[in-house]
Length: 248
Ligand SMILES: NC(=O)c1ccc[n+]([C@@H]2O[C@H](COP(=O)([O-])OP(=O)(O)OC[C@H]3O[C@@H](n4cnc5c(N)ncnc54)[C@H](O)[C@@H]3O)[C@@H](O)[C@H]2O)c1
Image (cartoon, rainbow, N blue to C red; front, side):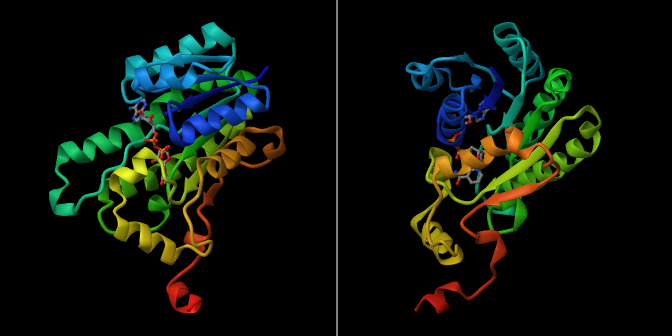
């Protein structure tokens, strides 16, 4: 039975990804720093362990990997999904705010991947990092969030370049907007309307629509895919101006 380590697994995209792995017969180490929500989400699930840790802390990261190996003996896929959003103007993004976003979205992804590399060498496993449409295109209010996700996109390419030697694949999924707690905390009605205007499919995505791309990239069906950045975004990244006008 294969083993996935999924961060930010208590809810949203991480929880949907966990459930898809379980449906495919994998075991899952569910990581989240929200221990209460993690316990609640895992209650009805079999073949999981829950790890209440902060991915941005080096000592936590080492424990996440050692506890997963203790429980399951191997790691076949690492999904670096835990992340935080913060929308604010450049002038109001002080260093503390900037560091908080970078330390979780970027440093956490780097640290956990590094800590899991030896285990992934053994299985010739896969890393899937979660970027964002905000890392592919710039927009207002996302100086920290967008920059952290652009860095995650490049980190993925660095990982693919170096770790391919060991048979480890690294890919990045960039979701468009999904109605999770993270998105709803920062998406006003005006932002929601703007997304609809800019997305050819004219709607938000679902957690499952992102999770199915993630689990595909971890599967044997994607065995020759590495270093790729795949947007699951309703076509948002591929378009320019003009959609609302064309719809009328
Ligand atoms: N929802 C969207 O519209 C959207 C769009 C693009 C990208 N994303 C990305 O998808 C990923 C998942 O987001 P989501 O929308 O499911 O959000 P969410 O807030 O529903 O879930 C994120 C989970 O990560 C956990 N987490 C955050 N920081 C952590 C840390 N330091 N250590 C451990 N756990 C931590 C949270 O407790 C939460 O359970 C994020 O990386 C996010 O940036 C989301």
